[in-house]
Length: 188
Image (cartoon, rainbow, N blue to C red; front, side, top):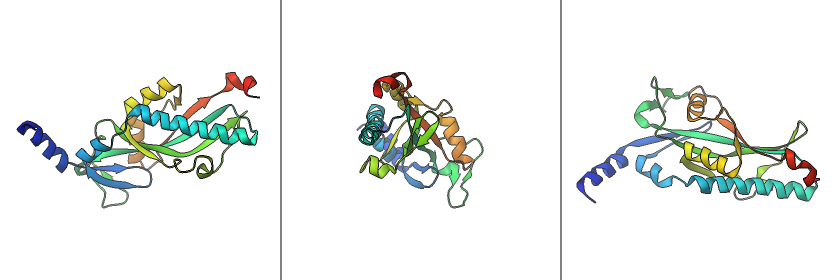
């Protein structure tokens, strides 16, 4: 590595970031964060697998639905110096912004919707071993991958809305939908 690259590496190793979501917060270096970043298409495929597991589960039960909704829980990353996580609730500096475009995302729960009725099952039963997997990804890249896969992310979901919910201590959960209504006759 050239000296310039080594200096950048040192800065990333020393820069601490804090991930904050509705229940947790933990620290790591900016370098670790960049290493843990997942490819958005792999993340979208993982959620595609979750939809598939839900479909197979309810097919075995013979239960129909028009839509599957994965409730995605998000976390964001802040520079350590922009927050005081020794206090509860966490104190944020005025105008604090999350680091780059990074988010942590995972499925909190899911619902199936059939003619305005919502029903669900324990995710551990429906999708064992993978129901609580979490990813670190670029939010913008993730939204693009969802669109490419034909999934509908809640229109209110944005990095700004996720950050605002976290700062105001609201649960940062948004819906990812897969709708089947136009195929309903084929599914029965």
